Image 1 (cartoon, rainbow, N blue to C red):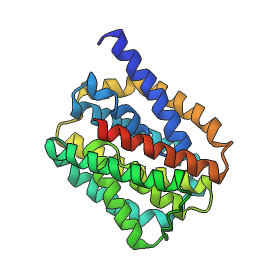
Image 2 (image 1 turned 90 degrees about the horizontal axis):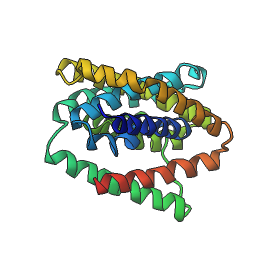
Image 3 (image 1 turned 135 degrees about the vertical axis):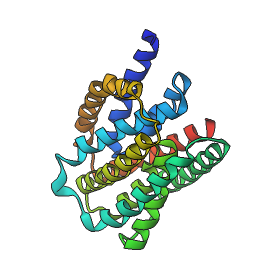
Length: 241
């Protein structure tokens, strides 16, 4: 692998780690906008998913006391089922159509909240958790980008910043973990995939460390602006793919 490719992977991994630590999600959106240019799509998704599991574990375990299991369980259970099933449909023209549609939804939600000052009111009910989990799990399985729908649900239902980030990443431990097992069962995760994951792991840890410094300085309003602002960027990135 060329030095420029390695440098691009490491730099994007650090950036993805910072975003994931600050917003609670977003690693997959950052790297999947870059990695498919020099890696096969399926391999990019597989490495991103492994990093996603690593990110979720690194965030959720140290902050497990802040996890709201009542909010988490309906979302995680539906999400892990959807992520496992959607791995089987992770390539083809339909994927591009779906990710473009998701991009437009994210842009609409972001404009409403960032520029018009609206607030999405989502109650932490089992039904809403199941819906968010299904959408997020499908995105995780298809594109390794399952954070935005679940983040919107968690952001609206969490009592504070720590609960939001810890519960969201506990969810990712389930969905990304199951999606990774499904990819391994389908032969998508290869020795090369594991080598690439190990290569970027230190860069991921650095990004999470830097992002955590920023996160600890955010109040609830700034966190919401950061999340919805990043959703806007994510939507534009998805549409331009």
